[in-house]
Image (tube, rainbow, N blue to C red; front, side):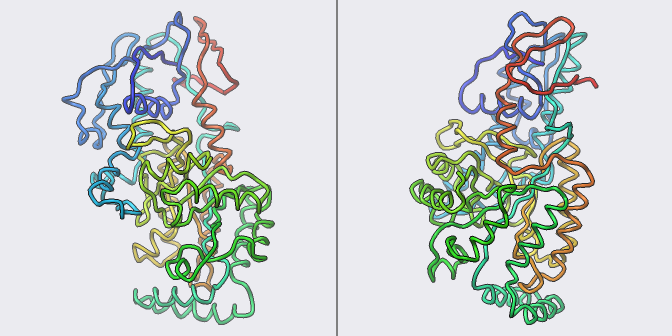
Length: 464
C-alpha cells in the first residue's frame, strides 16, 4: 500500500498512473493510515532517458517514504504513451502510416525484447517494502482465478475469399527468398486443396484446438467493402456480409470475441471507424469493444483519438510489424495517452507482443517452429514479471496457402503456454478487469494491515 503526496499534471501524472499500475501497489485514500508515502522530487540530473532505458532507476528511500523524480515519470510516459514515436511522424510528415520500428527508443537502445516498465514497477514495489519497516504493504493479486500471469490469443482474419490469388502471391514470396523446399510443399498442398476451402478448414482446426484447450480468443475482422484497389494493396479482401464470412462468425460464436480490424481508410477517420464498427455490430449482434489496425498502421495520438470518438474501449495495435517484443515497454494493459495533446484518453492499450508474420514476412524466417520458439521466449519474459502475453496467429497460415508445418507449430505454442497455467480470456474481458482494478483504492487501513477496498479485489502481502 502507498499514499501519494504529490499532485501532478499532464504526462507526469500519466507516468505515475502507469508506474503504480504495473507495480500492483494499492493506493490508499485513508489520510490516517500509517503506510509508505510516495513523494516526487525535482531531481533530473541522474534520471536521464539513457539511464532510464539501461534500467539505472533511482528511488530515494527513507523511513516510511519513497521518492521518485519527475524526470523518471516523464520517461515512463514517453515509452508507455508512444510519445517518442510521435516525433518520428512529425519529422516524416502526414504520409507516415506505420511508424518505423527504429523510431522506438527501446529498439534504439536494444531493450525492446524485455518488459522494462514491468521491471520498473517491481523495483518500486521492492523499494516500498524496504522503506516500510513494520508497516503493512499490500499489493493487488496479478490476475483473476489465482493465476500469476496471463495470455491472450488473437487472430486477424485477413483472407476469406480469393484464396488462390493469395496462395500464388505467397509462392512468389517464397521463391524470392530462395525457400524452394517450402514453395514445393506449399504448391503440392495447394493442388490438393483446389476442391476445398482452405481458409475455412484452417479456421475450423484453429477453433477446435483452442476449444479443447479451453481458450477463449479474440478475432479481428475486416468490415469494409473491397475494391480492386484494396485487394491489390492487401487491405480489404472480402465482404463481411458474404456467406463464407457469416459462417466464420457463427463458428467463432459467443464464447470468443469478435472485434474490428480497421482498414487503411480508418487511419485518422472517426467517421469511417464508426461506420465499420456499426457494420460489424449489425452482423454479429454484439457491440465490438476493441480494434486493431490492419498491417498495424497507426499515427500515435491521431488514430487513437479517432478510435475513442468511434466508441471503442481498447486498441490492440501497438506492436512491431517487423520484429517481436515490447513496443510500449510493458507486458500488461495500460491506459491510453495522446502524445500530441498531452492528455489521457478514455480507453486502454493492449500491446501486441508477438505475431507470426513479423518473422516470416519481414525477417525471412520460414520455419514455423522458429516462430513458436520466439513466441515462447517472449512468453517467458511476460511470465517472469507476472504480466500479459498477447499473441497473434493468422488463421490463413495453412499448408495450401503457403505455410507448410504451421498448424502443427501453433498447436505446440498453445499446448506449451497452457501447461504454464496462465489466466486466459478474450481481450475485452481482460481490459474490463484491469480497468476496474486500476480504479480500486484502499478506503481504510487498520494497524494490523486489514484493508477496506473501494471494490472487491484480491490483495496479498507484498513480502510473501
